[in-house]
Length: 161
Image (tube, rainbow, N blue to C red; front, side, top):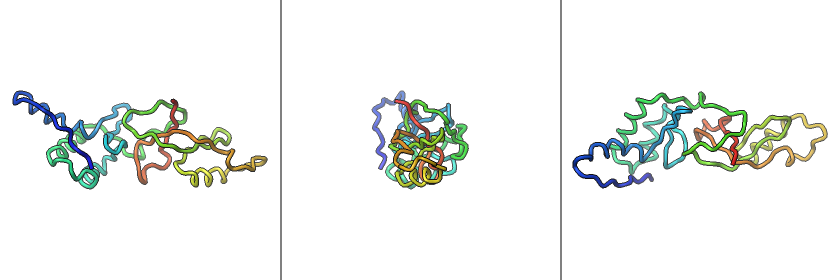
C-alpha cells in the first residue's frame, strides 16, 4: 500500500504543502508525456488513472487522490499504444522500474521479451539455417517499459548502463 509522506508545515505555507502532496505519488515525464506512479514505478494509462488510484492505493488520502487526478487532467498524456518504441539502446528513464529480460540477436531484430518462454517462442519463429542452438539466438538484457499489464507487449526498450 502507498503511504503518504508526512509534511511538517506552518500555517503560512500549509496550502502550498498540500498542493505538492500529489508529487509524493506521481512524477511526470514531459519528454514522453507519461505520468509515473512512484510506488509501482510504471506509467499510468490516462484511461486507468482513477481506477489505479482507487484500487491500488487504498490507503491514499482522498484529498491526495483528488489532487493527483486534477493534476493529471492538466497534463498532455499519451495512451499506452502511443508510447514511444525505441529501436536503439537508450539510458534508463528515471522513475520506471528496470526489468531483467531477453533480446533477440537474429539479424538485427532486437525484439525484447520479459520471459524466457516468450523469447524462445519469438526466436524459434526466425528462419535459422545453421543456427540450431536456440540459446544462442538471444541474450539477457536490462529493459524498461512505460506501462505494465496488457500494455507491456512491444513497449519494452533496451537500456545502456
